[in-house]
Length: 191
Image 1 (spheres, helix red, strand yellow):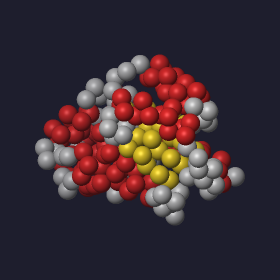
Image 2 (spheres, helix red, strand yellow):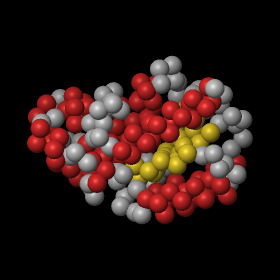
Image 3 (cartoon, helix red, strand yellow):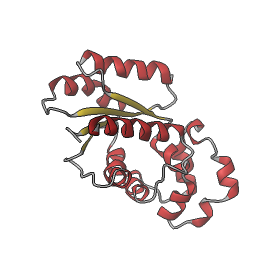
């Protein structure tokens, strides 16, 4: 792969997840060599830094992926605004991916991984699979994950989920869109 994929992230927990999960999705990938995760301290921090970082970046071949929670915003407007920031910074080929609604939606999309990661088999029940059939539609998935796993913490949870999350069985459309976009960028770089 020519250059790295640089992930500009809303929060440190997404960094922990991606640093553990991307090498499973793309065998051979090494953090800082094939990809770089740059976490921010929330949406405002990320939004303010996009144009500045993209315009100032001087590593040839590096491409960008902006990953931000949607948090019940208008998806189309938010994605268009983030794309404009990328275009204005001279990086129109940047990939923008929204997590609907929060990172924990991706966890609810794979209850089997959640059950294994937290050694709680009862989580992956038919009732819960039905209840969380559309994980991206939950307003506050973090509240639901905390209800299922009272001891859940964002960073530790991301680390645990990175080892078990599977795209094939995940019911989160935003997770599948994220993975499809990253696979496309990887194939373009390889081809």
